[in-house]
Length: 149
Image 1 (tube, rainbow, N blue to C red):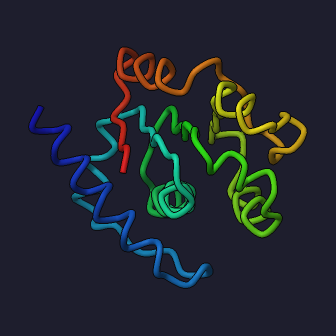
Image 2: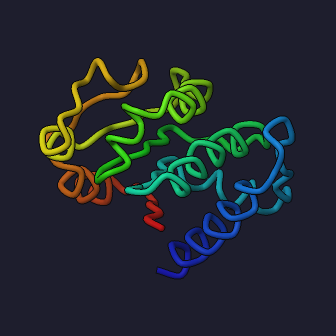
């Protein structure tokens, strides 16, 4: 429990740090923090708003750039931001630039259905899941450390 609280505190602090930083600057993470994070192979974010969504993607980039080793990093998306991603080309482009083979992004199909969003409306590499909340429970059962701002 203590480890989870420490990781949540760290991730929250990093999330707010990353949002205001110029896109070409990747903030440093202290070596001791990287070593601690390297003990957690599965990291995840659950997001339903644009600001934390952007932060989750930037956090991914920051961790990779600072040598944090993880087996899995997943961003689970639900709510109105799903429609924002489909309609806002700037947001979609921003998210697309972070996509690579090590990042998993899943989108709630319930939200997609309710908001009239098709998979083809989303950036390449995004995957549908039946229900974002069920996916979050699944990730927790798999031992992921999750942040849901």
